[in-house]
Length: 346
Image (cartoon, rainbow, N blue to C red; front, side, top):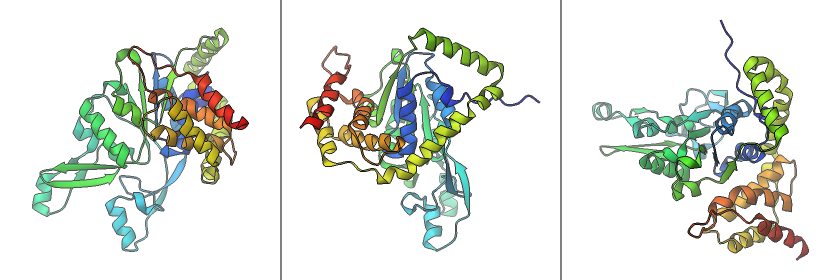
């Protein structure tokens, strides 16, 4: 029997550093709000998301729970696990791995949110829930390829769940709620249409990817792809030490993230940047600080520095800036750099 083809290693992807970094940061800190990857066909968008699955960390789960609840976190438990906890019952625990859950563009509402068996509820007086994609996505990555082509109604459901961290199904006066904490990752080709502003703003980060323009890098892309197609097992083994190194760096960042400090000057910088660039609301300021702390943790540092703020700004600001009609909205990044570097001299 032929061996199953190995996934293309994440660390073997040539270039696209912003895309790779955005995915890494969201795993280290799932509260960053996910990432939207925009770019033309053939720029490794889907490859990167699929490849990333091999780097996802292990975590503790309640055995037998369809939502993979965290046995140590009462605040995010489903009703069943909560009830067991309140009764003082012990959980059977198991080691599980974070996964990438696909949400197809053609998915119906029932498939996304799940269904309630009304007949069963009336006859037995108990709720019977058939889980949907959002149930499987709890504590995982929810991946939507061609997110800009999603039905508006499904987009609304996603927005509600992303904002609240729960999914609520209501049918015939009966309702059921379950945890739906997921990292939202979307990919799209801008040539196929725009994304609704409400959904665009929900993504913590937006990364634009383009094909490599450096000849040597393009040659490397060809070589690696052909080598992978010839023998995916051998190719994956060749990159295993790099994969292990990145995995360990991510795990270390998760451990130290809560200890990373950010002084008041940095908070003022974030506010100043948002005001100067005409960013609406406060979400950008908060995202900037959270992302800068995560960048610092990834570098093994316990204090946020200007370079961390600069990198965070490049990921969280471009899609949030006000645009005048017919303006592409390309961010004048030199202005951001000037504002951040200017803090040193104040």
